[in-house]
Length: 184
Ligand code: HQG
Image (cartoon, rainbow, N blue to C red; front, side, top):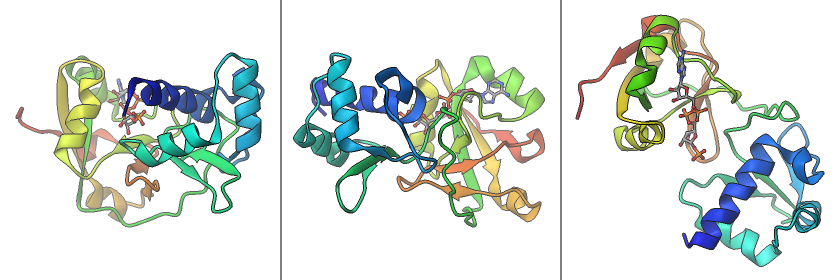
């Protein structure tokens, strides 16, 4: 992605996941925003967006963070929300036996005491592969990977969901289902 696309992607993440009201935008409970309202609200707050730029950012996004509606009139972030305006009704799905969560070493003591919590977001985010988990962890410092025994959690009745971009979501992970992986 070019710098311009990366900046636009960060702006879209901010308004579509966290602070839609900052540009006077309304999201429905599934996270959808009207594309014209997004463009107008952005312009009023000094961000120049147009349909071509938005389409390019959605299509080229490294993590497929955004989706356009079939009629092209609406856009949403597919996961990662913190705004209480949104409560996507993800369909529960059987997870793979093992999932991974990348975090930073400085969070380990707390996580191994109280389990994984969603923080500001609506869910704990998990991935199917170690490389992704490592990159996620690196955002906050020296990365460390936790294995999540998703199979056992699922057998104990914990629900798992998968966003359209493949990220696995669950509400929390108790310590009993977590183990630290040896450093790569
Ligand atoms: C940590 C990115 C202390 C948790 C990624 C994480 C992901 C605890 C941080 C998506 C804790 C929350 C989400 C506890 C969890 N004590 N720390 N009990 N439980 N934590 O950013 O998973 O680029 O909200 O380990 O790819 O890092 O935004 O979650 O370090 O999919 O599209 O608290 O964000 O995607 O941080 O990342 P975050 P995350 P995007």
